[in-house]
Length: 373
Image 1: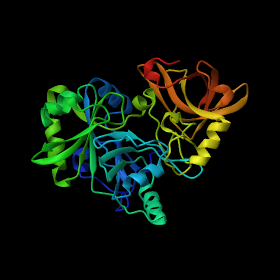
Image 2 (image 1 turned 180 degrees about the vertical axis):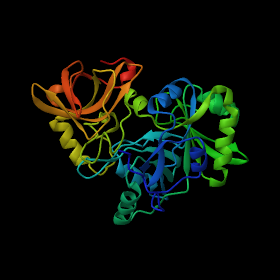
Image 3 (image 1 turned 120 degrees about the horizontal axis):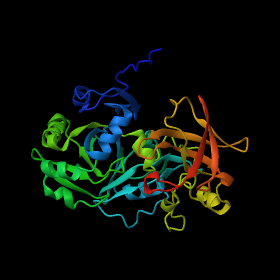
Image 4 (image 1 turned 90 degrees about the vertical axis):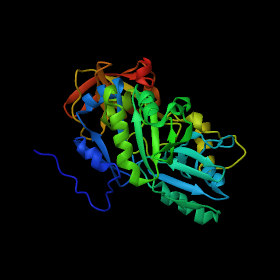
């Protein structure tokens, strides 16, 4: 049976880089923030091996920016996250879980502090723009909340520094992790951050001039020919190995930051208030009953996913797998699972019920790539 097709319309937006993505032989797309996101070029495993050895160009325009600008910009962003931003300075990137009044995860963007009165929230797949606009209007805040025409292009992999230096100069090498600088390209300043949704290292280029999109892609591709540069996209195997949770897959508004292992971003004792503070304080006082952990699943291959897989211990369901893939480097399946309190200790033995049978598994701390068991 052939796979169903995705019908693309004006509601499913292409990007300024789409012509090059399709020329590069993209094999599959998903829809992310109402925009196309490639999911494979060669195969998932071949893309994984190439990413870990060389350098890739990723069209991640789907990482939409929610711009919050005006005298009350800092107040609004601080209201949206339990993370204390009081010491943030322009040029910083900060991971900021966003929560609702019940402490549920709304999104987990990277906040870029452009200026004292201007932020970009580089969001995962949910409609943060509407949440931020509603808060600003309801609270009467003096801010503009918009989605600017910004289209990130990521350069990821162990050779990313070498490639970026060839196109943007050696100034890229001095950009620290989760910092950004403005660097010229064809006479136009582009925001370049040392960040990206892989653990292989790299950069994200925030293109705000769509007319330069194809020139930027071509410049990177031409400069990296001897580095074996190639097209790529966020890779399921590599992100699970690296412990990178996916909003909408591994966490949602049904989960709070403590259950997602994000307690270090919850400063509940800070003097400024935020939405969901009382709820998160209650959760912190009572303790959580489930938590995201890793699983190492036995077997040479994993069956194709077909819905969430139950996790079983002594005949009872104790959790659920949210994302899974076979890791060639680790020689086993790797997965994220939300596990009950009595079964989340690293090293515990459990079973996973796939649609093709039961697999033995071992609970692991995250990330897998650090050798955690």
